Amino acid sequence: METMEKPIRIALTKGRLEKAAVEIFEGIGIDCTELKDKGRKLIFKDGEGKIEFVLVKAADVLTYVEHGAADIGIVGKDTLMEENKEFYEVVDLQVGKCKFAVASLPTFKMNEGYRRKKIATKYPNVTRNYFGKLGHDVEIIKIEGSVELAPILGLADAIVDIVETGTTLKENGLIVFEDVCSISARMIVNKASMKMKREPIGEIIKKVQEYVENK
Image 1 (cartoon, rainbow, N blue to C red):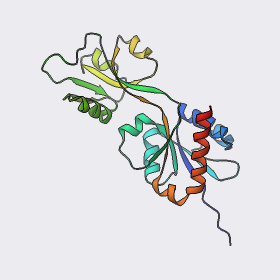
Image 2 (image 1 turned 180 degrees about the horizontal axis):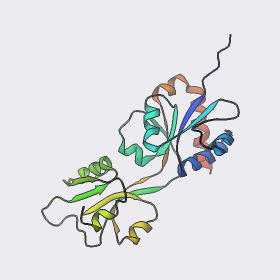
Image 3 (image 1 turned 45 degrees about the vertical axis):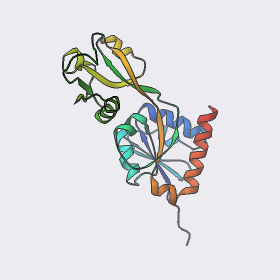
Image 4 (image 1 turned 30 degrees about the vertical axis):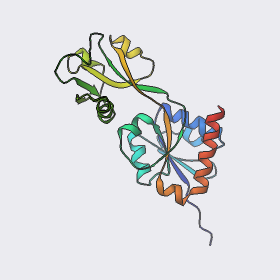
């Protein structure tokens, strides 16, 4: 009796990256009809039942892929840099482009004074690594909400955050002092899946790479 091959499961981040991923997958010939007409469902199949999509939060994409509950994931480089997980990063999708930056009020001076500077951020690991490379000993304050408030209210001297257009910073009287690094969406693959499903996953990676390069 012939056994059915398990579908390739792809974990997507809800929201804007989801839309960009759908455009890419449709561009390489994968049927995303069910995913676009989703209602309250969380798992979707393509027309042939060879691909299965799941919608999860960004940080959970890494967890599902690392533990093999998903074969492939689409997630922002910001999440990859913050979370130290095991997988292969295979394609820069060239979408969701933005950057990490150090920002504060115009009066901020990083290298003046003897007091340790306080840096507020949603990304403590990214921040710690960046200032560590510069040789700065800083105190990091983890913020979950609007990080722009921290320097305004005196909670921190500066912030490290994702900057896309800079409009939010400007509207709150903050300016960018240093760019930390550029970020964009990436495709990641579970290490065991890459061995066990080498052909179908390799084909998807190849087609996505070609699509991104020719777009």
